[in-house]
Image (cartoon, rainbow, N blue to C red; front, side):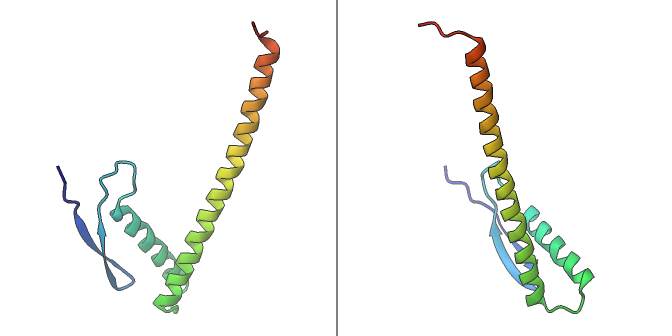
Length: 101
């Protein structure tokens, strides 16, 4: 059974954008995405009200890219640290528990 996904229209910096809801339960909704982006836009416009919308859009894009890249870097670091800890724990277990062959 093919379910129709709802398409909603949003306004971002004066542009009407249509986004389709996802049927994936673990995804972020279009409402949340647009609310977040508009929040970033409003924060920049409050601190620099004389910027053109195109400048605000570029600043938001740069800020989001920086946040994404920082998260990826932190994730890689945490995964490496977790793998090292797991190897050390396995080595300790192997030293304490004799193998039976």
